[in-house]
Image (cartoon, rainbow, N blue to C red; front, side, top):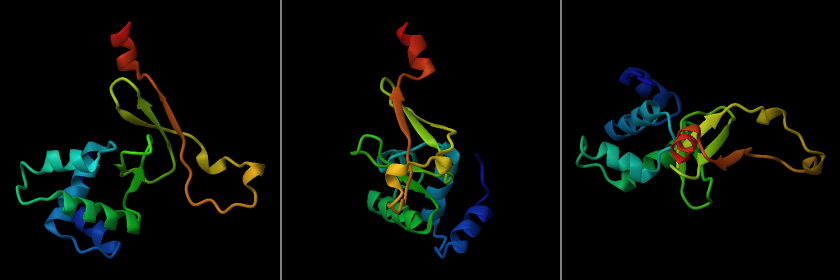
Length: 140
């Protein structure tokens, strides 16, 4: 999804983040890929265009985005952190063959459990794994 630089600058400023060149480029990338990239994927994509970019800058940028609610972090396997620009609650499906992570609609906000009545819930996640349609067709 193409988003203008001015809209990105405005989004950062509204959250109290100075819109530096690096921050704008990372936020622009997240909007363009509409996926769930890792720091390594972001670095690999942006470093040819921005040779002075470091992984530390990406980590720091993403951490500042997380603090103000511009992105969410997901970790389906408990090891690898991925960054999600889609902020509304939704589910994730990870293909075990190609590794692709896809969003799907689910009414997480309406999910209640009597077992959790005394708990304060800060985050809700739903993850499924299996084979995506593309991989299913390849494996047949």
